[in-house]
Image (cartoon, rainbow, N blue to C red; front, top):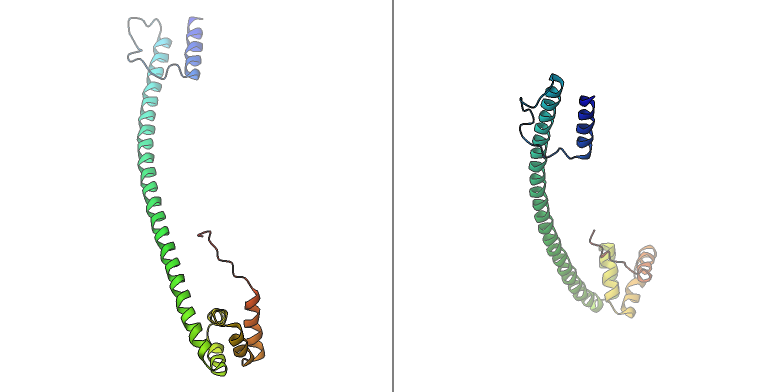
Length: 170
């Protein structure tokens, strides 16, 4: 009966976590009254040893995770810095391209409309659109008038479209 009560108390204490901070030397030869009690106490000491080992492993793992987290945070910060630099470079590139397209538009504007239409027809579609958007409308009309119908139609459609620039950064 005493043994059952002792087992019940020990089980209850284990389930509540009260025995986690194990006192050392549970097995005291003078206080043990039976072989069964000795076996239970040795088993408890073994469980404490396993719990201590597990706690040490968990502590080591937590240290490793904190180190990794720190490294990841540093890498994320570095990547964000690079991303910001890249965005600045792309913005600068776009601004410089815009300036150059503006200069080229003024050159095309001063050309003979027939010659300008021959050159525009051979250009990349987006560059042709950008050039025509930078030219005075009257001159652009004369250039479009000298293009074949299909090309003039495609470029004319571009005048009605509003470009949407993606600023999400992705």
